[in-house]
Length: 276
Image 1: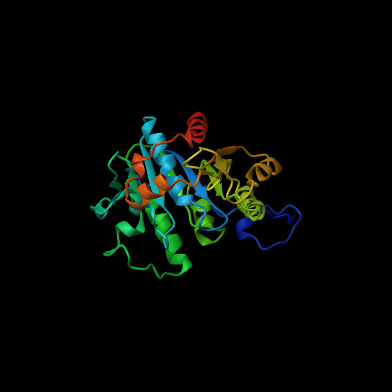
Image 2 (image 1 turned 90 degrees about the vertical axis):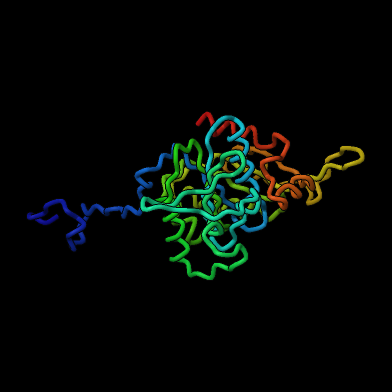
């Protein structure tokens, strides 16, 4: 340490043993007119496991429990949340900011598809622009009195999940998986990223876990016995739910009526979030 050290390591080029590295703060402030109590990220290590479905159902489940819920659709290049809720109107704004669109039961939603002229218009943007859009959904949208916000993140560990973890005060994440053997490696990647970013993991949800026979009611493990329980034990995590392949649920989602689903598959997950 130099005799003239002023303890300001960020402005010093000396390579001394007492040097203290300063962490860069990438956090973004919520819009000044917004109020969000809890933020839960829904993540998956790979696509096609039903992450957006779980996001929607968690928001609906907690909405039924009397909480004001919201969904920030961070899957900018594959935004499916508006379709699941049957939202056709576009987001509006004022001089103060953007306003989310409300679903039939009062869930607030913001998605890039609510800003595009046509729902089928592709979002052909590079990573930094996509990440910037997600940050604007946090900083420029007016979220009024939200108890639980669920962030539907794109699969993997790329730009957008990194942006969300660094920019938004996430209270925890739920990892969505499928029953295949591959799940072990995929879960490990998602869990390790969360640990690196110091984000608490609420637990795992295994989707497409089984199919119920319409004739005899027997549960059929169409992909074999799920590996999610083993992965949960390995990482000391809670297995929150095993969700079935349900044709009725798929039909409701395709029809934009996800709020009409029946079933308490995610009730334990909702109770855990409520108690955190």
